[in-house]
Amino acid sequence: MLPDLMGATRDYWRKLDEVEAAYRRNELTVQEVDAEVKALMVELGQTRRQLLRHSWAIAQTFVNQQGEALAGVAALGVLAYVWLVANGQA
Image 1 (tube, rainbow, N blue to C red):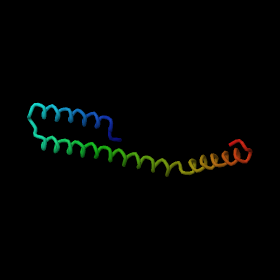
Image 2: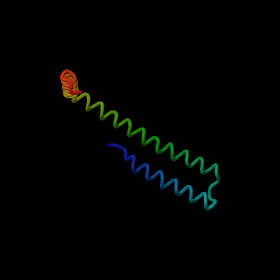
Image 3: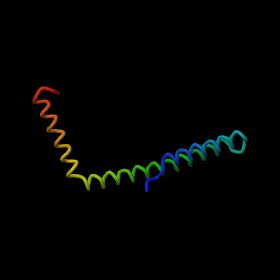
Image 4: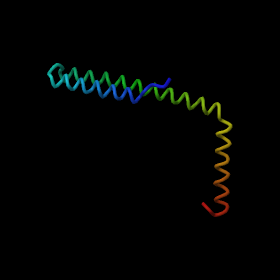
């Protein structure tokens, strides 16, 4: 299952707004705000890295399963380009 990056980003912004509100109410110091923001950024970064890892694994699986078909399509594309160049249309 792919991580929900959009949902994680919405949660990040919601939590960031909560930190800002707490700072404006003088419940947090600047140092505490910095620590909270760093922690939120780490959390969002982990979600982003998970999504990239999952996406890369999906792409690798697709290429492994459809490698011959992809190579055939690429070969047809090259042949079409060569034909167009040879006929002066490209």
